[in-house]
Amino acid sequence: MPIIPADNLIRSQGGGLHGPPFLFLSTERPQHEGLEARIADAVAPTIEHMGYELVRVQVSGKERPVVQIMADRADGAPFRVEDCEAISHAVGAVLDVEDPIKGEWSLEVSSAGIDRPLTRTKDWVNYAGHLATMELMIPQDGRRRFRGTILGADAETVRMRLDEGTDIAVSRSNIRRAKLVLTDALIEATAAAAGLPDQEEPDAGDPAPEAPKPARRN
Image (tube, rainbow, N blue to C red; front, side, top):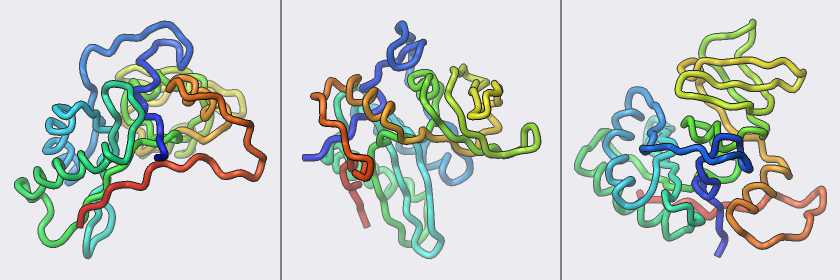
């Protein structure tokens, strides 16, 4: 059965994947707005009680919206298809009661994957030293989109060294979206942190490892 390491396989650290320990005392929830915030507030307690952490809620489509729930395991174990199914059943029941969307909708649950979105402080801290992209809501230095190496973050600010060599600091509240860039270094580091056996070097044209197919609930 295919396995995708969850973010928590890379323990909360202060110096990236191989740095000194960095302790997060409580579960940090990602920030959402509008409908996605209402859904996140409704489902997060249930997900956390089950031993998971909410990574992102995203609603797409208009006629029949799709509610996408992305989660990690809180215990650091690999995220499996069974985890998707368990969260799907529990979250579906919560949303049936809360009824945040009028009319028909469907639910999709998945792991964060290797090239995960960066939605919490721990995501930025854990992956310091790796490539990421981010898009801002309000332009900074005349641009909205940036790509570079993560230097670190705190609750207010993200620091990144851009591909052209410039260091920038960006307000967390101004980030529309951000995610890791899938690289060989990221794949190797994630596998090592997960304790997975070494694999043969893939050919240049080989596809990246696949994540478990998300659980869907209509």
